Length: 437
Image 1 (tube, helix red, strand yellow):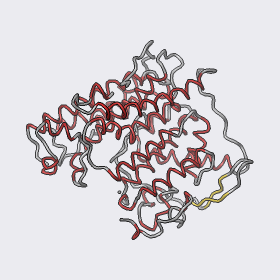
Image 2 (cartoon, rainbow, N blue to C red):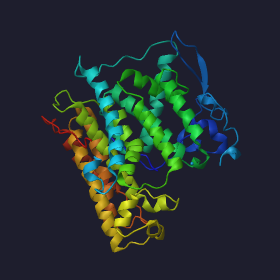
Image 3 (cartoon, helix red, strand yellow):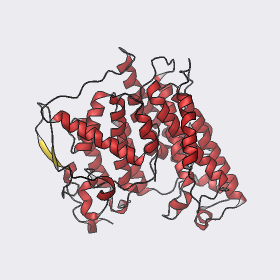
Image 4 (cartoon, rainbow, N blue to C red):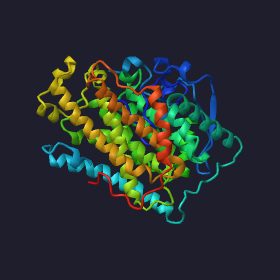
């Protein structure tokens, strides 16, 4: 599984530094490569708690082995044994489809409601300044700077776009990016086989502490400050962790409705996290729900693109992220995927899958224009660049078994002016609900 950071950016799997707190606590298992990520040791930092809390010390380079979230138990590596109604197959089970979409749309409505309440008194999100307590302001500045360095290293195109945002929005997006990347690495990183459901439970407990203003490490502190300043809800973050749990126990999806829910968990969630930070244009007449739905559609589109690009890579790990019923209808099976042969049946199947992904991209486009003007360019760049991966799969004659579809640097550079031009288009007067259940 490769988590798509829609509205932010999607990038390939990366080796994150051992200085990234939670994952740092397993550095003796060589989960991470610190030399590629962090060039310095930040040592111990102090997380300031308000008058209802106490101070505590947190180490970015510790041997606590996951005790950072309140428990141990992973001390030894040897202890480990890992819309859609209109687009889904019409023969898919209705009950599953309804329950999946309703679950996702309920979250969408909740996130939209938070923003609407915030915007009821002002058209722009009002930022609270960093709390200037001794040692605290400097720590937050350092934390956000570190997040920016991570984003610049692993999401170069998007990072350049974030520089057009206001400083507050820019820092917040960096913090969200880093948390999502760290979470993704738990089940998609070099030591994913050592991650258990209980480890994800502890990561979720740590997330809850973070939302309560009790960050464990420096990078947690950046996100903790972000969620205190913007109307960001914890549910999408929890849902992303649920997607990680799904990857530990599930390697097949019987229909698109099941796959849709998975795509929401691992990618659609990022849009819901990011819209409150990106901001909706004060000139937009679109409903808040429709903008969130567009963000959700982009997440689904990005993740479907990931899946289609990585068929061969996933198959090498015994995973098939394709609807089983649709494979069967095309006269295909898992054995055909493991064989890795491009046939006419495979080409026809891929054409239908690519068509679906493009339909989600089409729906997502309707919402990008409604974002705050300073946030549109990086989102447009992400959308246009990622959409081109589908073109590359076609150019490879649908051979996603042995050829990896990628967009060349020249095409990326060519796309940036186009993305910028589209970001200058003012919001529409009306946006229809996207993929509403």
